[in-house]
Image (cartoon, rainbow, N blue to C red; front, side):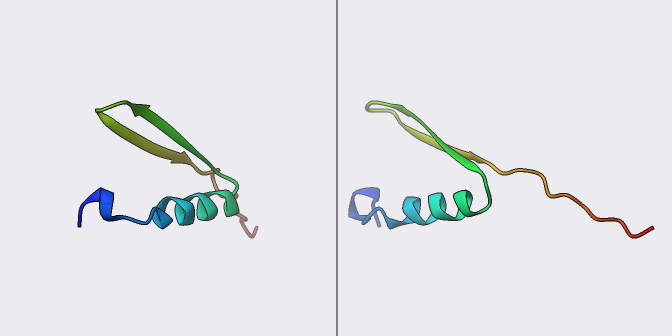
Length: 50
């Protein structure tokens, strides 16, 4: 399947998941060369029983 055959729902799902985990999603795009998508997620706090 070519990228042009896509309906574009994958990125929308990724954005929703990242935002639900208090993260951010970023896009870098150069015309006629392509795009880079990246994301950040906060580190989890670990509870330690003493």
